[in-house]
Length: 196
Image (cartoon, rainbow, N blue to C red; front, side, top):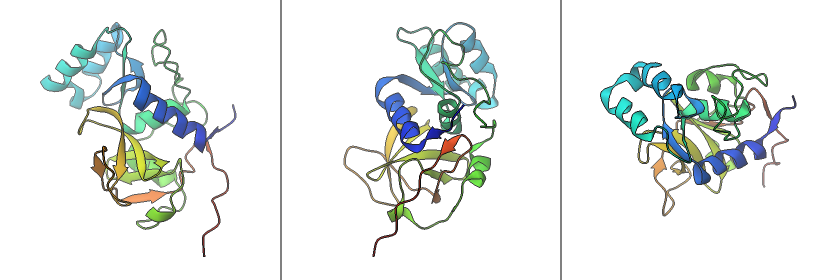
């Protein structure tokens, strides 16, 4: 299987944020919250076992169209593993740990990126990772990122990268590190040449 391009990653992340019903579910990489997936994700992680989270998962269950569950790093992995929104598939079309992408957490994923730094916000290009301890997102351009978080809307959402600046109409998050997301399974084209 060929590696996904940064543009394809960004396009899919934006599509999910804009066109699918989603819910933050720890350890879920795009499963539709239907049938046995509901009990699976109410019990797969201590975070989801909390009464308020279990209630949210159950409230999202068996809707039409379905709600798909993601967490931050599982959004990225799910897309790279081929997630396509197929509600008839256990994982929404994603195939676990394929395309050379291991099942790793956000803090390990950032270590797989090249050029990790605490600077360079003004030179970010689409598809790069934005990270803070325990959380990761995808830079989509124009000072925006796609992330899945329980904060604000409790789903996959487009947010402003506060390190670049806030944007009207978007919640804003300041990240710790940006960098070239030469993530496993992601084909990175050449970076644009630095300006004068």
